[in-house]
Image (cartoon, rainbow, N blue to C red; front, side):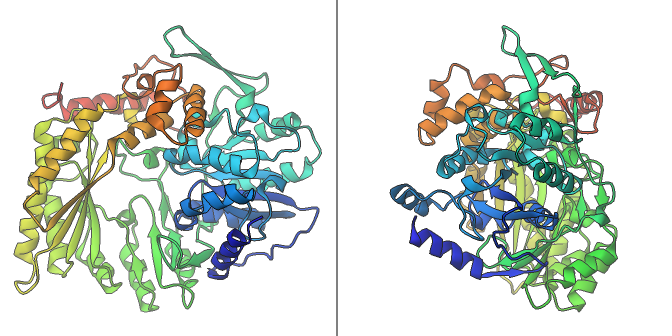
Length: 571
């Protein structure tokens, strides 16, 4: 055991401040013990409201103790391996392998390899078929696995599909009352809950061409797993129970404003994974925000479309009257009002993010972004008039039907934003700094673009290069971009079937060398990434009932191709 690693954990714990009441973590013997794991570093995890909420909910369940586990920082991994220290929980430094359940909260597909790393460090066999009766049950939930759990199906005993709030209590009851049962009997009890998927009880069959031929449940189980969702969001206390300075959103209480989105952007998994759009009453939000007083530096409002909340200005003014600054992550350009901009400015924000998503009107029509260039320029003017000295603009490259003129339109639109901001800002101020953030489009399961292929890597690199070249001589514009090869991996892990486990295992053996992992497996990753799907094809995630009909998604996809047009497509 490493004293150095344990001391680091104690220090992190000592610098946390509770916002909601939490239990003392004493070993009470008969309790159900859950190690809630986030497959990334503490710094990232503690800014994730979903992870924090599930932690608090499990600890409210009777006879249940839940402790947190994180992917070690890169500099700590050698110490784990040198000393043979098993992965342990933050609260009591208890070995993960001694818990009843190891439950992963998974928001991002590119964190999937980290699940295997953490199980290795804990001394738990990653493959579920290799685990023994005395090993912890391994569970997973979160946005990524709700859309498609199959790439992790060989590693996870059961999945929580959808929103966890109403499932936490029943899951804890079954696990607590079923201690001592054979694993298969316990999983059978869990599988009876709506929103629980047990991969062992479903068999996948494949055609000679590699596509899915059948996906059949064990007798007595439904052919489709219904996503769990909360009907009344006011009943869900979605507030971060802990604040810390040692995280990306430092000393900030996160409060969920709404869930889902009424806009229906065709690329957005959040819109479809959390359908329908729901929001919390203003009074409950005001009370939640007041929890931050004296304990945190800011309140962060969380939601897919914050500025769509009907009481956003009144809520913001109420919170500011209590001398609690607000934080807005991103605001829709067509609902950014002078009042909203004033709230952000009064909270000390100097930068706001606008998300045009695409440079051309044609592309924005195709993805169902319901605003015009005029709306975008008006939003930039509002911010400049109020003294914002920098903007971040979010764009995607590789959208369906995108051509060279659409990429050039990103540069042209940014120039127009820059010009309008300068005209509206004070002549004594320095020129606004603009950061253009480029992300490669990843077609996601459960969205209208689930049938569309990922764009060729070379083409994506050329498009990113073209945007960079457009601002090469402008010191006031910075271009940042993701690496397309990581978007390729994300597409593989988001749209794959359970055979994708082979790539995860290969990358584990090859210490994260993904190009070599792709070559070492008897599957072609391009089959999952570059291949267009037909409407008739059985998709690996079709067994998940998200509450949106496949016919509707296909209709939206066809509308996107018509509205976005094909004339600009690069061959």
